[in-house]
Length: 395
Image (cartoon, rainbow, N blue to C red; front, top):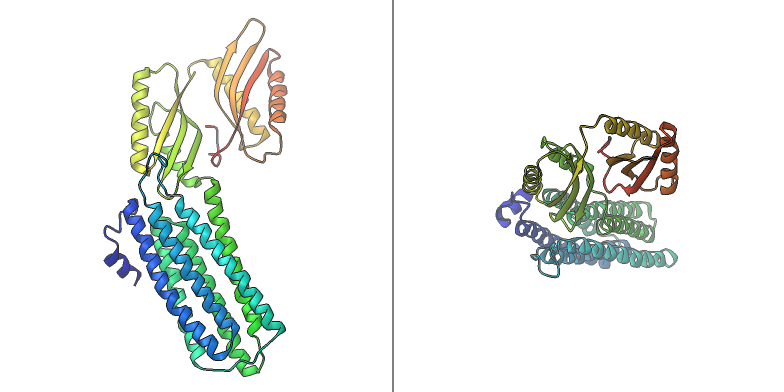
C-alpha cells in the first residue's frame, strides 16, 4: 500500500532532495493520517459511549489528537517548503521542527487530560456493558495503527524527516495502548472486574511518554545538535582527497532544516604552494562538496610550514603532550616564532565540551610540559571547542 501511494501521488518520488518532492511526501503522509485517525476516532468514541468505557473513549480521543497532529505536520511541511527570501536566506526548513514540537505539546496535553479523566473513573467507577462490537473495533484499530507505523517510518526514512519518524513512534505507542485496552476489556468481562479507569491511566501514560520523547527529539534539532559523525567523516575524507590539502579542522555543520545545511571548515595547505593554484583547489573542493552532499560549503585556507625540520619535530612532541591530557584533544595551526631570548609556540587546541579541566588548567598544564622540553619555549594558545565528534586523530 505504501509503494502504491508513493507511486500514484508523489511525482519524481526518488528525487528526495527536491523541496517540492519532500513537501509532497509530507502532504501524503498528513492526509493519510487525518483520514485514518478520523475514522478510528469516530468508531472508538461510538464504541466507548455504547459500553460506557472511559478507556475506549480516551483511546478515541487519542486518535483525535493524532489527527490534529497530522494537520499540524501537514501545515509544517507546506510552510517548510517555501523558498528562501530576503528575511530567511537559508529557507524555512526549520518550520518542520517547530511543527514537530507543536505535535509533541498536543500529545502531552491530551495525555494529561486523559489521565485526569481516568483517575476520576478509578475513584468513581461506573458499570460497563459488554458488546462484541468493541473488541472488533479495537482489533481493527490495532492493525490500522500498525500499518500507519510502518507507513510513516518508511516515508520518514526516505526523506530523513524527524516529524514523520515521530509520527511513526506515536502510531506504535497507540498500538501498545489500544492492545492494553483490548486485553483489559476482555479480561474485565470474563473476570467481572472493572479495569476501565486503570486502563485509561495506562493509555494516558503511553501518550505522555510519546509526547515527551518526541518533544526531546525535536528540541535537540531546534537547539542545534551535533552533526552525524558519519557525515562529518565523509566531509573530511572528501576534502583530504585533494593532494594539496593536508589537514582539516574547525569543521562546523549548521542545520537550517532537512536538506538545508551549511558546512564551514579550515583546510591546511603548505605555505609555499602557489596562491592561485591552491585557491583554485579550494574552489573545486567547495563546488564538489556542494554537489555531492547537497549543502552550502565555505572553506577557509590555513597555510602551514611543512618543510622545516625543527618545527615539525616540536609539533610532533607537542601533539604527544596534548594526547596525554586526553585522546580527544587535538592541536592545529602550529607555528614557531623565534626571538633572541625565547621562542613562541603558537597554536590552537581543540578541547571537548564538559572536559574535566578548565581552559586555564589546560593551558597551564601545557605551559609546564613545554617548559620541561626547553625553558626558552613560551606558548601562545587559543582554546577551541569541538563542534563535531573528534576524528580520532589530529586534524
